[in-house]
Amino acid sequence: MINISQRPEDAGLRSVPGHWEGDLIIGKNGASCIGTVVERYSNYLLLIWMEPAKSRIDAFCEGLVEKLGALPENLKQSLTWDQGKEMAEHPHTRRP
Image (tube, rainbow, N blue to C red; front, side, top):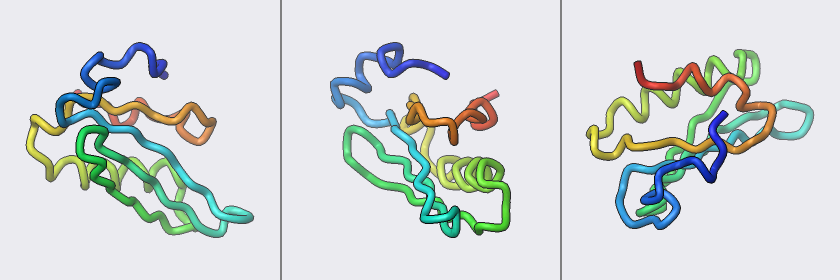
């Protein structure tokens, strides 16, 4: 996982669009789960709801690829994950 200090300087300054931060919120007893991805320049928020029965990381990756895939290329510069264990599979969402 890339440390927050290693992301592009533009992302930290919030000076250009296209840099995102992601996190996963898991409800009580794992009964609900939602992924959040916020664009740092505009604070635009994408929510990715996951069915509790599905593998969380698989559902999150599918939803993330679908939502970010619809965006123009200039809005896909970087994505910084929360450092929690739930994001250990983040490489599955990297661009080829």
